[in-house]
Length: 237
Image (cartoon, rainbow, N blue to C red; front, side):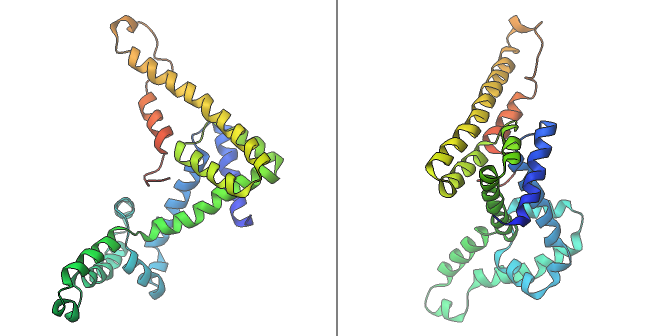
């Protein structure tokens, strides 16, 4: 367990426990994502070693959009200037490709490589995996943290899955069973809550319930989607 990750994990879980906010791992992911976007547009993007990597890997649609929203258009344009040259080279191939009929295949492979990678996604994933591992190990080693985990509102399903997979790999069978029981209790209670809210939301469109209060159901569809898919833009998180 790397000490560098214990502070942000503890802070996120404590904040979510005290304020009743959504999945603490989504909160961690959002923090990492914003930090990496800022870093990509910051002074480090002028370093040759960083620029070489961003030229090769590029960025996914979501992170290009986030960079556009940062209103640092010059930094983004400088990144795009050299990245476009690199992409063009990957798609066009070279003289030997044209002679031996491999130019089209080269272009296809180049497009696949460019579209399948993102500099920011890879950096986030590297840190986030360690954050998930730290969560599991803190649960095992730190009694105070275990109370923070038990006080969570819920874990979105993608992060619930990641926690179980990590716990399966890091804990012995007895501890894994205890971990599963604890977070599944949280999850099942929220299933009941969000399921009931969605059902009540549907009932409110029946004239027979016109005079009934909405209770917590007005935003139930949005909360259900966040629970099922996570509060982040990246697939798989």
